[in-house]
Length: 80
Image (cartoon, rainbow, N blue to C red; front, side):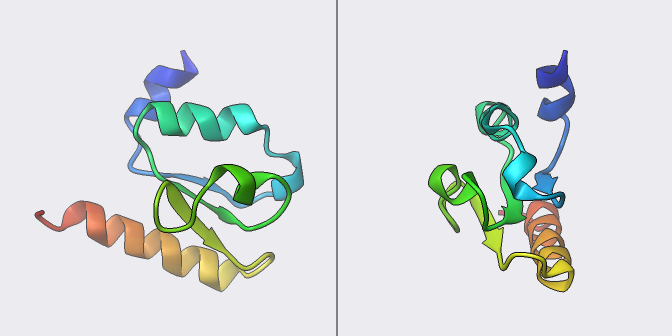
């Protein structure tokens, strides 16, 4: 069920404490071809390769997270 919901998303953002985000959430996003936008903390940087499989921003920088999410949205809306 969650995979079906994830397939409809443009990206998945983990703005909570990255130490509490289960690896499974990241892997579900990957399996759906959805880029991940997250803080670079906890085990997330071991799974998400910045600029390749998703995007990482400095820990606890909401402005950086918002900017990266905006970049992903603009990229998705732009024709390839």
